[in-house]
Structures are given as structure tokens and as C-alpha cells.
Length: 387
Ligand SMILES: Cc1ncc(COP(=O)(O)O)c(C=O)c1O
Image (cartoon, rainbow, N blue to C red):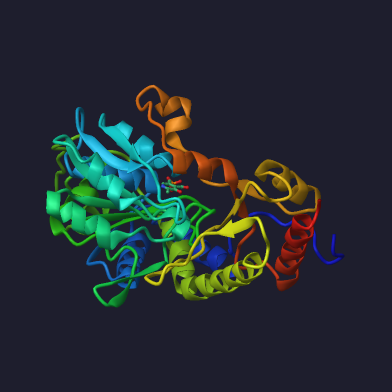
């Protein structure tokens, strides 16, 4: 290994003194959950995406669950989505009692295939849950066209897509505007912006915002801030079953710092991704995801596909790189191949299955050095030339 390179992790959150100071300040105010920091984070996040409303929650899984509940989805309903996603996408549908109807991905982009969405629509379809795979926007233009034609709402699983942009109707727009009815984000440490754990929902519907605000706090009709600021004695009610999906003010304070850094963090990711892509174009047997003219991904992860004629298979390549100090991860999983969903969805999805077996994620994080990425590229090139 190059002397100045140690073990390279697959991801590392960019957190420093500013985030630590913001968390400390939030703690010292004495208001540590769903208070002024959460409110400010919501408003700043809404401005960044261009969304009319944003509601902070405890995770993207919570956001997806609340989105489905708010649309009244439950037993006997169907939600069209991909199996090829982190399992939380399918799990959130199952929490409601509805059935995830898994459709295959496009072979090259690894994103949901709009044609298959259309073919999967049935009288029971209540929503399309479209994932922006590892920060690459899915083909929203076509999906929204299909959804509008059939009057079906679209929820965007934008867990990985904070800072990604898509060109629609002739202009570049941030993911989360939202383009569907609702978009859901994750702030887990593997994501581009992190609050430790956390999530955000954006919507343009004021009624949905009201539902989210209610549902995230046990279905309670008054928020803590409303009670705190009231000069009259007030009594809350609980008209429906809600959840504890609150974000803390400590998380939100960290998120606000991260949000200010977002353009810089995404720019560095794009720079690193461009270096990988340029090199990989010259290495026979490895492919990267295509960059379509209408997308500007945030490169939450950098995925490559190991083709059958490469000098070794995907698993052997991962082991080879690990032995040289380079951590990788298998590509995206498929929910339909996991025990939790297997018996409910005995389908065959060839593109998803091939992607799961042949893709891997290379290290990519903003603080990765130029020496580190050069070393990884050199190792990939070297292994490609092995007999
Ligand atoms: C596509 C997708 N959806 C949902 C989630 C769940 O996010 P969280 O961990 O914030 O609940 C993830 C997390 O990795 C994800 O990648």
C-alpha cells in the first residue's frame, strides 16, 4: 500500500468542531427536542429544496411510514416500488399492512423502470414509492406522467438524494421540491448530510404537513412549542394513533451546520466521482452507473458493476481490495430475496438480481484525499490486468 494511505473506509461522515459546538449550544439552551432548532432546520431545508413545507422526523423510515399513513394506505392496498433498495423502503409499506408490489430496475441506471411501473398498476394500487437510488434521481418525468394518467400519488424515497438535482420542464430543480406528492430524506451517517439519525419529509400540501406534524408526536393536537408559548391554559387531544417520530434539537442544530456545508460536500463528492468515472471508462470489465443528461447526482455512494469477463468476480474483487486496505460494500440489496419479504412476494426480478450480485460500492466521502483515490484507481487498474 502507498505509504501515506491507511485503511480507507467506504464512507466517513464529515463532522467537526462546528457541529460539536452547535450540539453543545442546543443542549445548553435546555430545549432539546422538537423546539426552535427543529423549526429553523425545517425552514432552511425547505428553502434549499424549494419545497413549500418540510417536517423533521427521527429517520427516513419514519418519514416513509408517516407518508403512507397520511395517504390512508393500509390493509389490502398495494404500493408499487423497487425491491432493489435498502430494506426500509419495503418495510415501511409492510408496517401499514399494504403489499409492496416490486418492479424491476432498468439494467443500466439501477433505478425504477417506468415501463414496469405502468404494467404493475392494478385497481388496488394506492401509491408509487419511487427510490432515487444512491442519490441518482430516478426518471421522475416519466413516472409522474404515468402516475398522473392513473391518478396515483407518488412518494419519493429520497433517503440518499439530498443535494441531487434533476432537470424537469426545462429547468434544474433540487430533489425534494417535491416533484411527487411527498419526498422523504435520511440523515443517517452514511448519507450526504447527517444528524446521527434523522429524516425529513417535504411536501407542497398544507394538509399533509398538518398530518405529519400530528402523527410524528403521538397524534397530539398541540405541539410542545404551542403549549410552552401559550398565555392561556390549553388542553391537547389525541384524535388518532400517532407515533414518536420526533427529531431532537441537538440533531437539528447539527443538521443546520451540515446544510450550510452541503454545496461544498456535494461538490467534493462530484469531483471524486468524476475521477473514478474517468478512470473506470478505461478499465475493461468494470462499468459505472450512467450519468444521464437530466440528472446531477450527489454521489452519496459510488457503485461499479463487475462484468463477467473481468479478471475476477465481484466478491473476489472486494476481498482483493480489502487486503490492500480498501473497504468496499456489496451494492444495493433486494428486499424480495430476504426472508422478511420472501413469502409475500415470490417474484423474479432479473435486473435487480444481477445488480445485487455484480455491483459493489467503492469508498467515497468528502474528506477522502487525492492520494487515496489515486491509490484505489491504481489498484483497480492493476487487478484488471491480472490474468
Ligand atoms: C433508499 C433508502 N430508503 C430508506 C432508508 C432508511 O433511512 P433511515 O436509516 O434514515 O431510516 C435508507 C437508508 O439507508 C435508504 O437507503
